[in-house]
Length: 112
Image 1 (tube, helix red, strand yellow):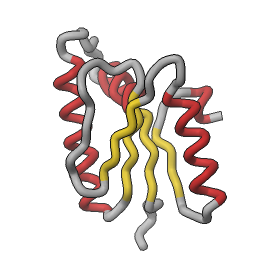
Image 2 (cartoon, helix red, strand yellow):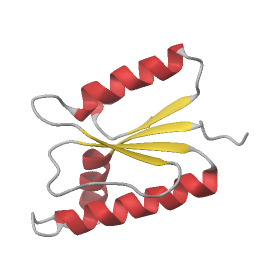
Image 3 (cartoon, helix red, strand yellow):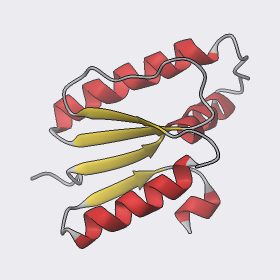
């Protein structure tokens, strides 16, 4: 096994907005579905290359978000629930089961 955990939980909306901010662009509502699709596709390819399970978690995201790539599972959280809470619970569950897990986010509250 390489250095990557077998399960990677990704806060999709947070990562997408962080990438846009780093590129100094603003995602307009009309551009968001295309950006979501592109990120989903890239993460599916990454999961296949790393032989990892990627769980891409979305909240507050328009359109139908789905992953069809092997190794990618897309979870959509409906309000009032939030992706952060789901990620924390899932990371705990996986850790207790002895599965190596990583969380990808720039959310300071989630990191804590």
